[in-house]
Image 1 (cartoon, rainbow, N blue to C red):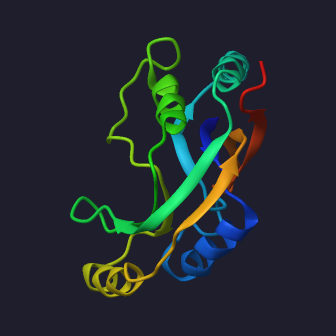
Image 2 (cartoon, rainbow, N blue to C red):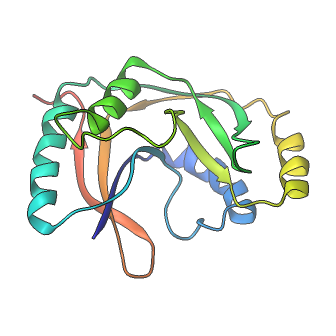
Length: 171
């Protein structure tokens, strides 16, 4: 089964992201707006229990923190994804690095970690240019507290749902 680890922002921020995702993100119906900490990976039932236990250990050592949306940005020219850029914090970096480190999955990320919430993807070059040109003008500053991380799993229809939730800083 496929699993992943993510942070779900507040309803207010999800509603804002969804106002764009409805039109520009083909994955809109498959998963709510989120910040990916560990992308999709395969695990057996036994292995996911070990992973959940390790995730509990990791999250207990990270205190709740502020999630700051800075602006709209893009991964262009790598791909035509448009996103809300999230300020890198020590806590986000620690969570990401712990999920990719030697004592967890021991694998490097395919890309460098850029905390973000996707609002548009798989756009044509022209559509990307048009949409990004409009959205990057928005003043999107937003701040909220994050106090939990979610282990997700993928259903047969491709959608994602919560397997287990871990509160930050609870040793």
